[in-house]
Image 1 (tube, rainbow over the protein chains, first blue to last red):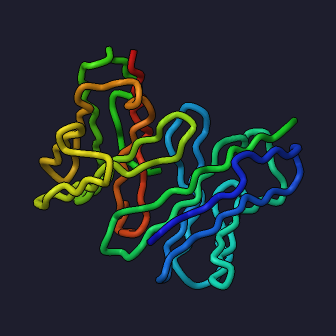
Image 2 (tube, helix red, strand yellow):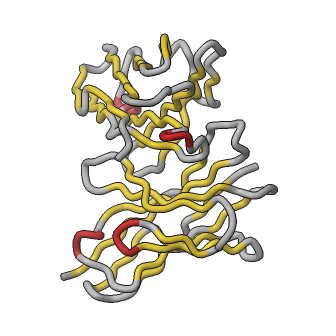
Length: 114
Length: 117
């Protein structure tokens, strides 16, 4: 069965600090992994995605994520956060390409203090 | 950006009434559409997967009798919430894969936020 765990429901950091949001997944095959961001009162926006190859993938707005098969993880990072990064971040897993079903993590609410 | 539209963006309905929400893909083919619900303080749950010319597949806890879906062509899908009650409130997203030929990335509309009074 597929599952995604985001162990931190809330993360608070100061503006300019570095950030890591954790994501662990469970999947028997090779997963497709995504990070989406949900700003207040809005839908989901794609930040970055991993299919294969280089385990470190770059996304928009300075975000990157690192895939680790041995740790079953796909943590999101940013070197220096801005107050506008305050939002809810979802780690998402997708199985084989012949299915369009995705599984969402529970989300991590990020608050950036000015 | 992704060209998936949803309307209405926000709606309020009385308890026991029904409301219909729409999802439209512009500029590409929405062979499949997935409908999700985000209840307050929760993550997104898959309601159903709809594929043109195939049966709609509903997830456990969601039924066609409660959430009938129409997917008549490659650019449009609609879902109705019948007899809405408080537990049906939340943000309803449609997700469409394959924007620009990338079948493995799912792009989402902005959502329809349902409030039930």
